[in-house]
Amino acid sequence: MKTKLLSKTTLLVLITAISCSSMKAQSYQVTRYEEPYVPLENAEELNVVVRQYYNDFRIPLPFSVYFFDREVDQLWFTNGDLFAIAKDDEFLGFRLSAQTAYLIDAGYVEGGGAPIMGSPTQSPFKYKVEGQQGNRILKFETNNAASTEELDFLNSNLMRINYQIWLYEAKRSLTIRFGENSMTNFDLFFNQAEFGEPLAPYYTVGFNRFVGELDEDLGRIFWNIVHHEHLSGSENSPFMVEDDYQEVAGLNAYPKKGVVFEFGPNLKAAQFDKQAYGYYPNPTTGLLWLIQPKQSGVLSEVPYEIYNALGQRVLLGTVEFQKPMDLTPLTNGVYFIRIPGQSIQQIIKN
Image 1: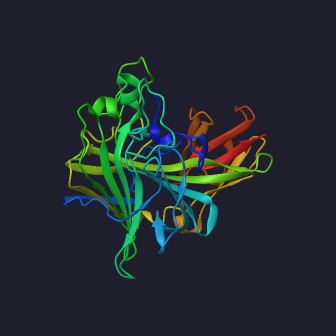
Image 2 (image 1 turned 135 degrees about the horizontal axis):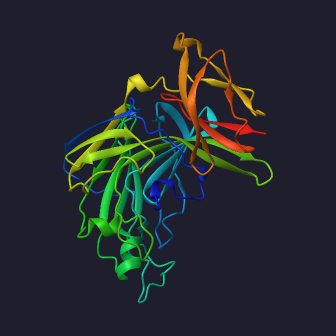
């Protein structure tokens, strides 16, 4: 099953897709309410002509913006999603996915499906800053967007969605606001299965956190997903879960016009990275010691799981701080270790 939240883009090239599946405290808390949806007027259009929706549009930041309680200084808008890089760490990235469809410009189809590249867009991406200094809002709008799945299966693009993402200067929250939609087939619009397979819809709103590693030979950064959380349950009463995309379902329906999801920081989870365990030596030839953070108190045993680069669990057990983990049964290569309540970390077996 393909998952749009893991898809490759020119901004983020992923080499693994492992994330915790335990139901611990999340980084964000969600509140659902309803307000009138107002389309943006006199806003900056990013795609004035028909282009691939996976083009990356760099957005200037008019004020301090935060993801996972970390300030960012680089922000992109692509396929209706937001990508960001931490201000104090160029190897820490974030992604907000407001939906899980493969979107397409409504003007991307001509006759049998050939693109009309260069013609005026029918599905503009827009952004605008509103409000007075100290209380400004950076607003993004995905307008009249169609689904690639409908085009692939039916050679049509009649279903459209509209939504906005708002980032606030006065608070470290963000909102996703849903506008008018003409969705008649939820399963098709959000299908995640390959062509010819039974429809497998998956819709949610989710956040990713990435850690980057520079490949000096290729001159590019490869990004590992180390944390993911998303909405689950009823559209009328959503809740946040941490998940690896397959164990917990997304939302059961697409929100109606006027619905707002507000995501605010969960202060209990803001310390998530401040109590990380360490591992020594890394790389290792077989034995790996766990270094206990000072803030965690005295613990006798800690459960762990180790995954390979394909996301397959290859080892699990418990470890004492006075004794090492034995990785000698594993073949040489790159692995990822997970301890409940901690971000996943990369280890190398030589």
